Length: 141
Image 1 (cartoon, rainbow, N blue to C red):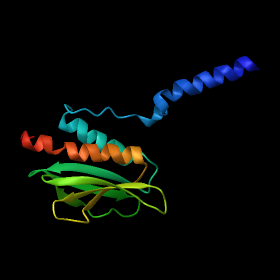
Image 2 (cartoon, rainbow, N blue to C red; image 1 turned 60 degrees about the vertical axis):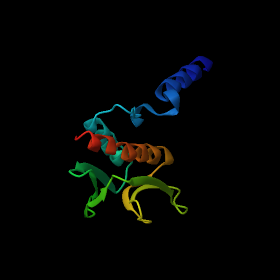
Image 3 (cartoon, rainbow, N blue to C red; image 1 turned 180 degrees about the vertical axis):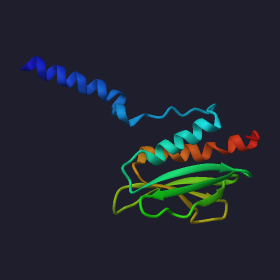
Image 4 (cartoon, one colour; image 1 turned 30 degrees about the vertical axis):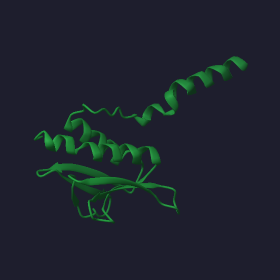
């Protein structure tokens, strides 16, 4: 009995290496990641939770991020935000405890919603990715 309990505990620890479940698909973000990898990571975060919608992202010419939440019954309108001289901000909904990420160009207090309904870890990763994308614009990608 004790041995079985120890084996079950060992299996659980292996599945939760580094505190993240194996199906979580932890992202490996780095300052040298290619644009397709960065956008892939953003899509991963946008599809990660069982939400009523999934986010899709595209980097348009002029360093403009397009984000769209696609829902089962009705898609949200795509939003676009220029990334040069913009900053991503993580917000926490006091009611639900979920987090959202907004991108606000300089002088815009409200910004544009690019991810919502996620935990703090995913929101911080998305913020990093949004702040990272302009590197590819400067390189002419």
